[in-house]
Length: 476
Ligand SMILES: Cc1cc2nc3c(=O)[nH]c(=O)nc-3n(C[C@H](O)[C@H](O)[C@H](O)COP(=O)(O)OP(=O)(O)OC[C@H]3O[C@@H](n4cnc5c(N)ncnc54)[C@H](O)[C@@H]3O)c2cc1C
Image (cartoon, rainbow, N blue to C red; front, side):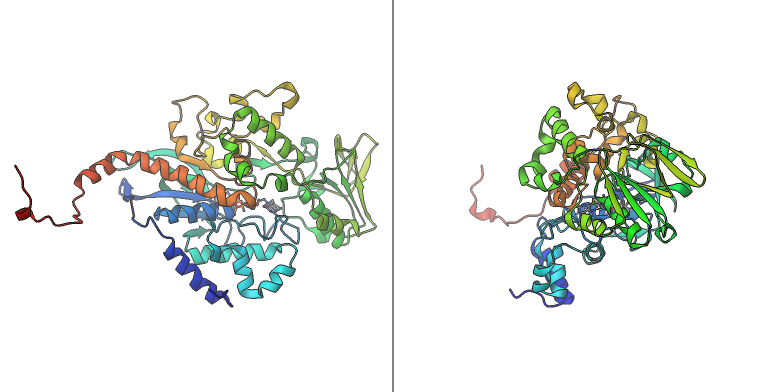
């Protein structure tokens, strides 16, 4: 078949592919109500790439009564149009993502339909803005139902009118009811963006996290200090330099910065598909190493900052304290104090279910790795102990069984799954394997709860596929 020459042609291919691969196409769920109000089969909180991918996977399995919420306005979901300050994605351009292996839905197909195969071949990396546009197209063309500008908050247990467990989800536009919830709320979705406490204690005018909105124009002519040597730290340093900062200093704790990308190493089917089935000791060991190495910076990220003569990278120089002095920040470091006008922390996230509004009624009972596994002393890491310890269907497990049994209907899909599942929701390369797995966790629960009804349905099943000719049959 010739490659589509326009988006319209590609969209026709998508429609055809979806039809050709629709099997099994039979609907199998029955609508429920609670107090007369409709109950969704699944509510997905977050319309970033993870939320869209799991929604698509559910709809392919004929879980149609779903809704995706995002508190951001349309076009502002996820980091791509907001705090992702790089030019290009760091993942390989040939990686597939939310398409779930349907060729016409892949990024490459979308790109080539508009700019041609030669353009795709010549492009080293996917521009960030194009990835974002692709996600918006993907959402439109798959018809995923998304409601923007609606924030979800506390989840509590409820019952359907036929006495099945379901969940009540408070939102900024009133309560919703759903049999299942998927939290696809992003990097900070199961905790918070983290910076050292002594930096957080400084006046906000002197510091920011790399994930915050930053007025870079106001840093013109200023001395900026950046903490961390991961990709985001470099991106922020580069933007400050491009916007005319007088000096930018990037501080790396290690004396030998990490220059390999562990997420490249782990991109093979064995790891992505089976890590979650391995014993705790191995899951911890691998993910502690990978998360400890952080998201490495790529060559173009490094070069973007390095080309400025007023950029300095300090290695083996962590920040050990900070104080505000004369409208500036003075940092304590093992090699003496350092004064800067503004601090940016590229220091990632910390897991803490107690900070998650959706989990306010169950966070104390959400099992974490520290409740389930004690690593050998040389592998101990309190930060990793805070990650949720998830069930094999990606749902939360109770710390104390019986206190909040309803949390088994809340599934997580995002970076918080990293210790239980590997990089399932934290990078694009895992998505074609992890999104169907989360969706299968949801459908398994729906199916299991429906067993009595389905048993009755089988017994009532009377659609004949053959008419017997009783005049030709000898019966006793
Ligand atoms: C700066 C940066 C660069 C990255 N670059 C790459 C890369 O190059 N390659 C790669 O593979 N990975 C990359 N990642 C990792 C990962 O791919 C992204 O973080 C990606 O956005 C994760 O998708 P998500 O759907 O989990 O979260 P998000 O895209 O963050 O989406 C979560 C959504 O949930 C919404 N939300 C949150 N809470 C609520 C609520 N209570 N109610 C309603 N809505 C809510 C948010 O508004 C948001 O739109 C990068 C991450 C960052 C931060």
